[in-house]
Length: 371
Image (tube, rainbow, N blue to C red; front, side, top):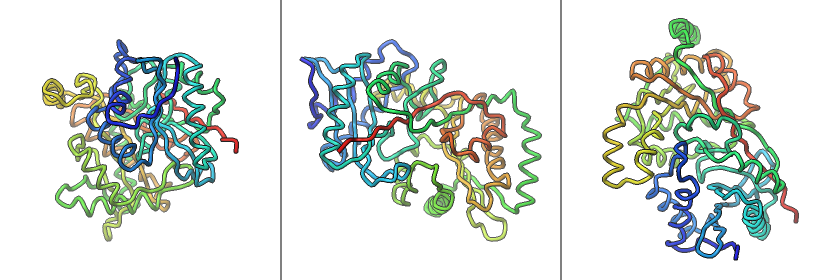
């Protein structure tokens, strides 16, 4: 019999994490989460802190769907009580989807939530944000979403609506005039009197503080998250340090006094390795990581921030040039940039100005919760 249960113990959390292995079996575009990290995260959020709720749709011993949700502030919907959902996975069955979302809405209503919105990754709105709506042909790059096309039909048939789309751009190196981009970047840096540094691991606390300063100043009404604290930024760097390359972590500072005015970061496409590792850090997975990490030929630019005084002066172009120049030196042949909210005109224009072409669209859904 079809029913919804809470993943409220360690064994059910593991079942929650492992469900996609069955759902995506045979689909080589799917990238599993790092299993150990996700289990640890959910044990903390669901079992220890109890700030998130995890639900499973089951039919006897079979798992047919899952969802994770919490209640937080949503500045776009002007509410302090929004139900954010994430890690949504479901078989192609409207009845299963409806039952899973009905239970989610019922529990959110008990918490006083006014809206349901998603999908987002816990603690990190830039990570695997939105339901993939367009761009299923190519395997996703690191920390972007992937799902079957039917997810959009399941959610819209249930009654959720588009809130906004997020864009991911393709950057083909053979279509970019890097010499022309270099000349433009040099002109901008000289005219606006700033330079670009790579992160300095020996002075990481200073660099994280500078990044935080830029993010605070650059945040606006179309950026879908509050600026993370310095402590949160430090935690993210610590968690992902083994995946970071200093060549792609760039901070723009004024020539006069090193005041930070811009920040950009890209990651090599470790999803290519995660597929080989099957989401596991066992002996086979570690071996795949060590063998193939130097062979990655794709890059994803995931963050770009410039303070308002420099947003219309070409600083983003200079940051992108520094990133692409490093990518060429490292043998990268393909890159993507994003995701940018569709209404974030400055960010979208910036990536198009360096040759970006729209590759994927990720849709964020929402619906009002009736009192």
